[in-house]
Length: 348
Image (cartoon, rainbow, N blue to C red; front, side, top):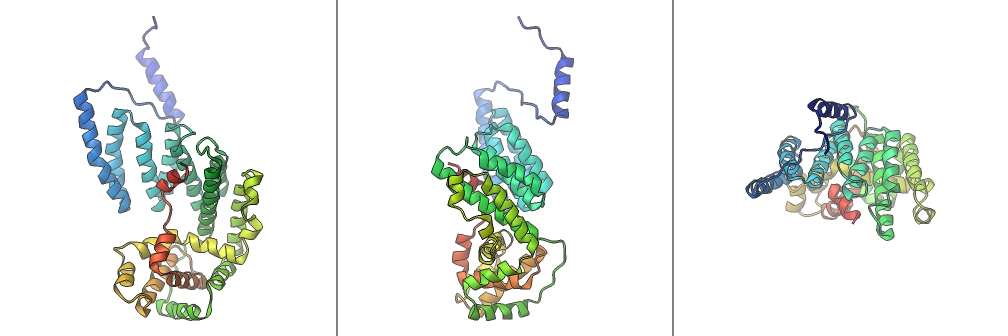
């Protein structure tokens, strides 16, 4: 018969776990049928509240609801479901630039699920993105490597190749955008910017606009893009590397311009594509392509990018012109930023 553990031993174990940063496992409780039913009812009430907070990007409400969900799901022993909710919370924190909170959260979530699960892969990919946004490239590489070398989650070769291609493109976009962000206060003249946008719409093709963006970005952006893209692709089997453009191709003006333009969606999408935004309302209430609509889009793009400290005039002009030429309906569908559910869907 095993000797009962002394309270001092239990206390020392808990203290050791705390010092090592390992979360203690929740104490299992034997629940009555009524208790389980009550907890499930509470879960049913909290879940739509959480989804609403995430959809509205209300980080305060999301944290409050997750705190309640945590109590319920831990009591029910549903750790996986809890990690699923928390990954969404921490991604919202990432979008709200609360990087340290997001990073701590993803690191914690990785300890709660097996590394062969989609949720672990998701948290790892988002950790890499968090460090890219902080311009901590060497730390990001550790998690990029783990994502691209993980063959436990996506077992189908074709699906894994598709996922790898798309996640590398995401890493490229994130490092390009991070390299352009600054803490400078950028002032722009919307009227002058709009006049220039109208001119390039009349004189430049889409290809020329992408090339302009590629020529405008600083050398540092291309150097960083090359570094991250090369590091990522070198982790892939030779067969996969062969079908992807080499890093040397990625930093040429037109492809670099396409990467940078695609990265802008993480800054301008909500201003343009939220049905509640003034730009969105103007586009669908007025004659499509009218001068008023174009100026709304120019202003939204210019102010959003300038708000991130991105002040290269040629970038603002070319980006606004491309979005106007696409039209909001096509742009909002084609460039919708991926969320955590996209990671899960692509890893099925």
